[in-house]
Structures are given as structure tokens and as C-alpha cells.
Length: 274
Image 1 (cartoon, rainbow, N blue to C red):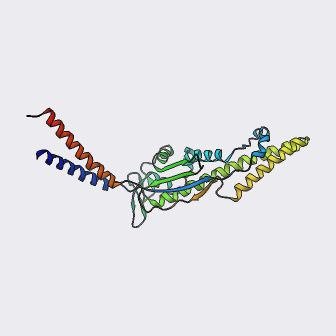
Image 2 (tube, rainbow, N blue to C red):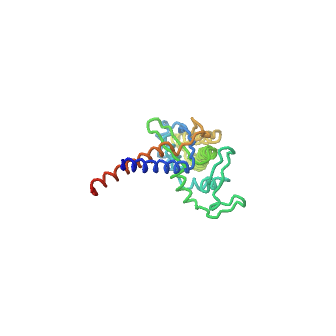
């Protein structure tokens, strides 16, 4: 009877503590999107010109290589440094305090950021922000079979989670587009000079093909926003929290209390009988 009382008391105590702990945790919302790599221009017919293309710094890569590159861009420190130049992004990433579900307002931690005068008490570096960005906020992966890219953002504000994810996708496309246009301009300058210098018909034909490919790249870059990543399933404002799983925490805490109390009784009865 004494053992049953101990088990009941300890289990109940753990159950109550687990409920209190679970209720104290902040809701985290997850917005996600499904993407696919934009099909690159046909390079099969240009493979015979790869030697000449490499001299001009022209990459004849396939779409899979392009997706891998843009994933690395999204995960890079330079990209995070670019993202935090947008108004409110750094504050929401690194100083978020609480979120009002009714008003939809995000409040900042006053110990980190003073919202009234817009000043930082402890402004985080972009390196620290990058660590939080990869470790707590952003998740991105590619299905090697389908080639689809899954990307998600977790935050205490469902609105910021959606808006920030949309910003990541938009800016990743924009930076890749700008980079390719710059590279293409340099390649075109080189190719036009070489075209004017060479009298050989075969080489002129090869250069003309490469020039055509670069013009097509520039045209595609300038007329489409979804340059490298095409959105199949856009970001959304989540209505249900992703974590914590409060029911699981309460069940686990209660079970832990029961197991520990039984272990205590077995230990006491085995080594301290009489």
C-alpha cells in the first residue's frame, strides 16, 4: 500500500509538472513550399563546343546542377547577410519575443531589441544570425528521385514564417538571375571579340551557337521571376502549430514519473529490506 502511494504521488507530480512545462512552451508554426528546378536551356547540342565555352567562362550545366547551386546559395552566409538588409527581418529572426494570435502582432524581446526607439541592446552578428537561420528557422532538402525541393520556415509568427519563406525564394531566384546575366554579359563580350577575329567558318559557326545560347539565357532571365526555382506549392500562413506536441510531452512526463517511482521502489526493496 505504501508503494502504491509513492507511485501515485510521484506519477501525479510528474504529470502536473509536465503539463505546466508543456503549457509554458511557445507555439512554433511552420510554413513550407514545394519547388522544382527551372529547366535549363538545351545544352546537348552544345556539348561539342564545351572546350571553347570553358575559355569564355560559360557553364553548360544541367538543371540538376543548377538546383544544387541555388540550394547552396540559400544556405550561404552571404545570402543571410543579404536577407537581413530587408526591414524587420533581423528583428523578427533574432529578437522575437511573443506572438498575439488574436491581433496577429509579433512582439520583440525588450532585452534584445527596443521596439519603441528601434535600437538594439544586443545586436547579433550576421554569423550568429546565419547559425540560427540554418539551425532553427530554415530547412531545405531535395528529393534525389523526383528532383523536387522542399523548403520550410519555422517561427513563432505564422505570418512571418510565410512572408520570410516567400522572400527567401524570391531573392534566391533574383540573385541567381543577376549572377547569370553578369556571367553571360562577360561571355558575350568575349565571344563577339573572338567572332570578329577568326576567319575560319567552322569556328565562327561554333561561336555563333554559343552567342545564341547566351542570348537565350539572358532573355529567359529577364522575362521570368521564377528563374531557377519554380514554385509548385507556394508558402502559406499556417493555422495549426507545428510544435510543441503538448499531448506527447504530458504523456511522456507521466510515464517517466511512473517508471522512476517503480525503479525507486525496486531499488529500495532490493537493497534496503528490513
